[in-house]
Length: 229
Image 1 (cartoon, rainbow, N blue to C red):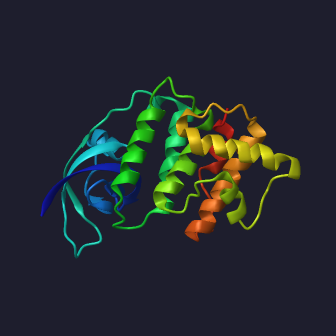
Image 2 (cartoon, rainbow, N blue to C red; image 1 turned 90 degrees about the vertical axis):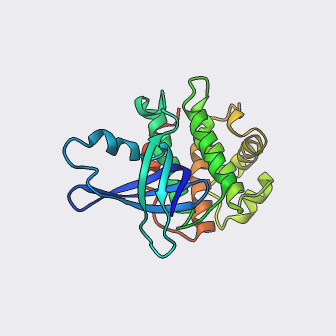
């Protein structure tokens, strides 16, 4: 059955000599894996670019309930980014978003509110008026709420983890920063320094690993820490 949907590419891996297997979080159908044959053959490089992580797509797909690998009939970019592909900091953050979301959801997981949040986050990241200093932290805090395990209060964040990597004198700073992120999201204008931001980033990723019961390392964290202004 053919269905129309919006989708956000989370990952693409090479399959055999010319094909790709792509994981796409679709708004209407949830997280699906699609096999795209011949997309990497000579003369089709421009089409392969459609499936870069975090690309926003309009799709017509074949939906077969009995199949773990679906197929795509039509795909086109729904919103071409102006900054993300050409700004190393923004593209690094987009890769980080793809990794976090890819670990947090599972096959066929469907959540229109989460999809809309991801789409809105990408649009915001692509604006030159956005302050990206707090972006990855705001993203983690807000996405955790859409996933159902994000606390509403800063104290709850600090109470739920098995370990706190902060010195005693840093905890009030971390708490006030979390309060700003929870209340203001991407509009956060906190003046906390790079050390507190990096410590909280590491802490939030550990929090995600505990909640998702996924101890595998975060591949993009090293690059992201270097990109944080």
